[in-house]
Every structure is written in C-alpha cells, then in structure tokens.
Length: 217
Ligand code: ADP
Image 1 (cartoon, rainbow, N blue to C red):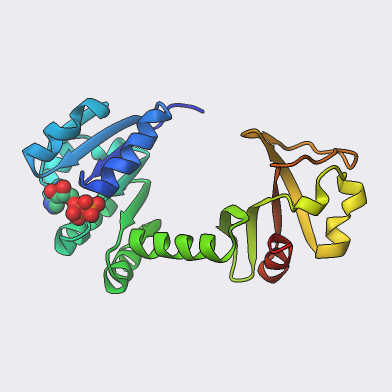
Image 2: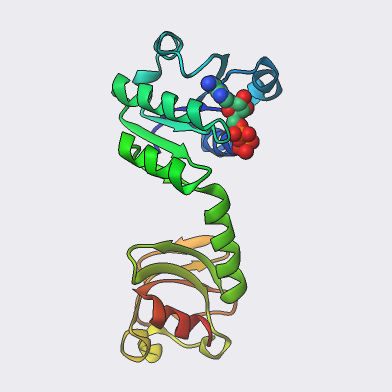
C-alpha cells in the first residue's frame, strides 16, 4: 500500500491506538496534543509530534495540516475543542476528517459540520462485545446496510471436509461466500471444488437473519 499522511489530533487512549496501528502499517503520522507531557510520552511512536492547540487556526496552518490526506480528531471529553477543531479543519479544506464523538449530541454536531466518519468508541465497542457474545462463531463483521452484513464466520463442524459445490450455501442458506481465511491467509479465488478444513473461516455476504442461522449451526 502507498504511504499515506495522517494527522491525529488529541493523544489520549483512542488517538494513540489509532496512530500506533497506522505507524505499524508504515504510514506517516503527525500527532498533535495541547499538553507537553502527552506529546513527550508518545513521540517515539510518531513520525512527528507537536504540542499545539488545535482550536487555533494559526497552529494548524503552521503544521501544514491541510496537506494531510486524512485527519483524525481524537479529542473527546472536551467537546468544545473537538467541535472548534473540526470546523477549522473543514474550513481549511482537509480532504477527509474522522472524529470521535462521546455522545449522540456531540455526534450530531459533527455530522452537521460535515465530518466524513464519526466514531462512537464506547458504543461501537459495546455493540461488538454484545455481538461476539451472541454469535461466538463470528470473528469479524461489516454492516453494509440495515439488513446486510459481510461476516467472517467459523466453518461449522459438520461442513469440515466438504467442498463449496456440495455445501451449496447459496441455495441452502441464502448466503454468498466471498473468500476463505485459512491460517491467517485470505484465499479469494475459490473453486467450487475447494475442500474446507477445520479452523477455516468463511467470509460471507448476506441478509443478517440468514447469517445468524448459518453462524448458529
Ligand atoms: P481518550 O478517552 O481517548 O483518552 P480524551 O478526550 O481524554 O480521550 O483525550 C483527548 C486528548 O486531546 C487529550 O490528551 C487532550 O490533551 C487533547 N486535547 C484536548 N483539547 C485539545 C486541543 N484544543 N488541541 C489539541 N489537543 C487537545
């Protein structure tokens, strides 16, 4: 993947977690926080780190924030700063803005400003935990719409040793297999003769109700 430039504003737990993963994937990350000690704590993980008040336009301009492909506003508890910063970024013409919201109302304001992606970390994580408890065979999922998901589901034991033609999942369960995950590798060009093994995961797309039926097998 081509190297991208990200800026993360607010180096609390959320901001640092996002930044670390981006750095691990070898992208450039500029970290910004208003508090010196926050910057000092984490600067070794970042390409650059700066102490600045992100609600000041001059500071953002001096750091060249407008040139970043994506800016993540990870200021949460100080809602006023989060909103002011986001508005400034929007006015500066930043291409893609991602912001964390700590409440529904905070999220609604961010939406009005035109944030591209609003994240509710606690709500999203809570929902993920509940989903994992309710469907232990689902490793990962993406909500495509109110009705449809893509899910990574553990191969039901009774299907071990069978191939996709025999299983005929589209006809029997109304789901479509996109890929297979085996030992951490994703296999996308699957033939109908592909024999499935224990510990395989199927990446499938379908209606949520059908996916629940399949993952409960
Ligand atoms: P978390 O729950 O992820 O730890 P917090 O909301 O507690 O998130 O932390 C957000 C970070 O944002 C803090 O480190 C805080 O110093 C920083 N911050 C708050 N206001 C500003 C601002 N105006 N400019 C830059 N950083 C800020």
